[in-house]
Image (cartoon, rainbow, N blue to C red):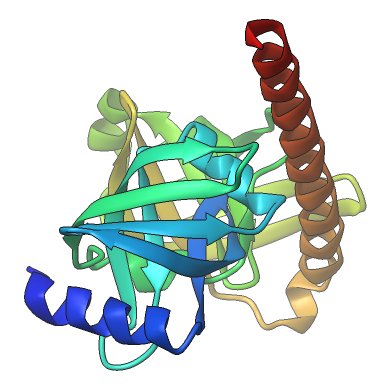
Length: 234
């Protein structure tokens, strides 16, 4: 648990120094951050002025992460409210990030369109859905029933990854199995060298640009919608 007394004390000092902090979220697998400044403290609630466009994530996310530097580092918190017109967010219910937070900081991107992959395991070849791609591995989504029947942690698998810029026959090892809605995500780490998976860096770079452009468009749409609604009320 976070020591709230120490956290609030640190935030008071940060506010006094007018020091910037970062608000971190994940959009389509990609870590995205917004610069922010603490405006006020209302008990255990921090009121921040958050810069666009990635701040739009607070429109639908219940949880975000506040990056405040050492010694606290990253602190998980609830999004209590967010006014996109004013750029003001209220954060509270502070907690430590879970053990998976560090892994999520690796750049991974979700595909633009649903992509099915034949995953060849020790027992059977099963059709899974590509969930995300990183420089070191992929996430595959499949039903909990199929996963329990055919795959377990540390199994070695093979699959062909079809990307817009080409296809690759790859192999890897299942390192993590985590819940994903009603399904499960297999975290597969590549066993090939970087040279053998050479198409992946360019794919990630292109997807990263597209995801950030999409996020900017979502911010513009949300801002315009709220501005129109506010004008009608006035």
